[in-house]
Length: 394
Image (cartoon, rainbow, N blue to C red):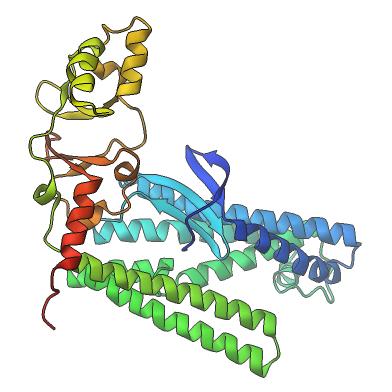
């Protein structure tokens, strides 16, 4: 699903940062508060037991959200897409990818990975529920109706998890971008039309329609049934979905304005690079002190891009008496090395983590040979130039 940008770090899984938006704590409190009273009626137990069951259920639900986004993240990493982290927020979670998918097949694989994990969680919870009780007990727990059934806290927990995750799966598979179902729809439209931009516009249009529909249902529920809380919740969800879909449409318009512009069109075709065999002492004297740059790309004897070497790291080694080491021995190690295909479209650079943190990307050909360097300033100038140019005739 979709989400915000800022977050508070919780922990890491497989090297992937897991964070939460401040709104997550509000949802956590609301969920626990609402479920505590309902669980008390279903379990016919004390406030303490009901509260503990509610806390455990809500926390495990958010764990299931993390697993859902981990499905997206691992599928993306398998496709060569870097993952900057996973954030939980008001309405779910988001796996923040370093770039967009580059083919319908890649889009479909990444989009379906999360719902598949959710479906597996539903199956596990149903299986556990049937081990803890019979079908009638499971149904009573799943519908939060304890009448005529004896439900244990454990059975209620797993049956409720099965229900909420089943709802999450069904909702997420609605073909409305940016929901997972909307991304599946985009992948199909992309395959049919051959254009990612047209496909995004189609899926985002469906997302806008669904957003308006949710807002309308929320208003009707609040006015006709006096269920103000759930009506407001639907309106808020519809509004966020509508804004995300509108953002996707705006992004396609921008992508069309820079259509045809590639990395090769704006990059420096004669970048200064340090051969991998150069010692750190020579690199400091002949490159860092001469050009006054804080980093340089490093290439092997055949011109293949290997990574970057930073001035701070090189000077630390020289001061420590390790100036005879080669620059290839102290390459910057990270999940991203800043390389980009020299024929990649300009739109693929937007939001790239290396462009933000290094300030440049390193254009390579199909064999990995360094062909140029494109800086964040060059990207900004290209965007400004495209924005100033008159658009295509209607």
